[in-house]
Image (cartoon, rainbow, N blue to C red; front, top):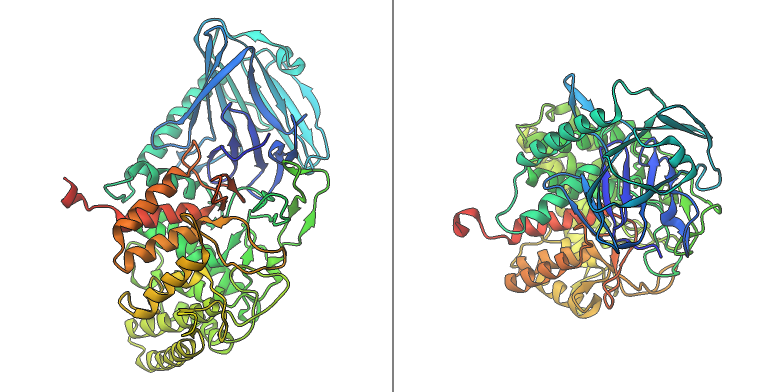
Length: 594
C-alpha cells in the first residue's frame, strides 16, 4: 500500500520520490509539472503493474535507507533472508560546469554487492499521459529507449540488456550503473560516467551546505529542510513549487486532492524569509526575480494566487481518470483552478518578498525607484481591496468573505511601501503610504477584533477563528506584548488544537469539517508561543514535530493528529520553511552553547 515514507532526489530540474526499498514511485519529466512517468504513488490499492523503477531482491527481508550527509543522494541497503545484501545509490546529477549549472533530466542508479550472493532484478516501467500509455521500446548493445507520447528516455547501462528487458533475476557479482535520461549517447562507459557524476554531485551539495547559516541545535533537521527547499526550486525561472506531487488527499477519502506542482505567491514572503535566514542568497535572488517578473507582467496589476513554474498564468484543472489515486482515493488532478480565485493577500506577499531588494546589499539586483513605483501599483490595489470579499489564503471554493488575513497582508504591503519610500528619500510617498497603512490598521483593529471571542477572527466582523491570526506578530501588525495577541493565541489554542497539532480552521468548508492538522499552522503556533514568553513549551512542541517527520526527515502538508500519519502533497515547502524558522528562533546561540 502506498505511503509517504519517501525520500526525494532531484537537481532543480526534475525530482523523484523513492520508497524505503528504493522503488521510484513518483517522478515527472522533463520538469516538476510534467507528465508523471513514474506514477505508482497514485496507482491505487494493491501492487501497481507499472509506473515505477525498482530493484527487487530475491528473498527480500529488510532495508535500511539514509541520505549521504549534506546531500540529496539516497543510499538504500537491501538484505535478503540468507544474509546477502546490496547497496543502491540514487541521485540526480547537479554541479557547476563551464561556469553554469549542469542539471540534466537524468536519474543515476548505482548498484553494488555488499555481502553474499544476492539475486535481483531491475524493473523499469515508465508510463505516459498520466498512466494511460505504455512506452514502445528499442534497444542496442548498452541501452534501451523508452518512447512515450511526448518524451523519449534512454537507459544506458553496463547491466545485461536482455535481463532488463525480460526482467529476469540475476546474481549480482559486479557493480552496475544505470543512467536514465535524455535520448543521447554517453561519452564514456556507464560506470565511469556514474562515478564521475556522483563525485561532482557530492562536491556541489557539500559546498552548498557549507555556505548555509544554521542554528546550533537541530542542525540535521535544518540542513535536510534547506536541501529539500532547494530541490523544490525550478532553477530555470527561480520558481519554488508548493510540493512535488499532485492529488495526495489532505485526509482519507476527503476529495481534497489538489495539484501542488506550481508556485503560490502567498508562499513568497515565507520562503524568502527562510532563504534569507539560511544565507542561501543565490536561491533567494532567483525566486525574487521570478516574483518580480510575475508582478511586472500582470495585466492591469491583477495578481493570481498561483502561477506555473515557467510563469504561465492559465492552469486549467482537469481530472485524469487513467490514475485511480493515492490508495485509490481519487480524483487525480492536473492543473489548479485556484488561479481563477481572487485572493487579496497575494499583493502583500509580493511586496513583502520584494522588500528584500531594497535593503539586502548581498543581492546583485537592487531595488530602485522604478521597482518601487511598480510595487506602488500593487499597493493601490491593496488600498482598494483590503476589506473586500475574497477566497482567502485557504482558497475556499464555494464562498467569498472579507478575510482578516487578506486585510492584514494588504496593510503589510502599504506599511512596507512607506518604509521603502522613506529609505529611498521619497518622503511625500512615504507619508502617502503611511497614511493608508494607518487607516487600514485601524479598520482591522476595529472590525477584526472580537472581544466576545477574545481574538482576531477569520473574517472582519466575524466570529470564527483562523490559524493565520497566529502570524499577526511576525508580520508586525501587533507587538508581542499586545494583550490582544496573547488572547488570540490562547483562543486558537482552545479551539483549533487537537493534541499537539493545529488545524487551519474548525468550521465546515466546501468539503465538510477538516479532519487533519495543517503542519505549517503548528509551526506558526510554536513561533507564537515563543513570542508570548512560553519558550519551553514551544521547544517541546517543536521537538514533537521533528519526531513526526518520516524516515527521510521530511514532512507533507497535513498530519492526522491521532495516528500521526502524513497526508497531503509531499514534500511540502511550507512545512520545510516551518522547520527552518522554528529552529532559528528556538535554538540556543552558538555563544551560549559552546
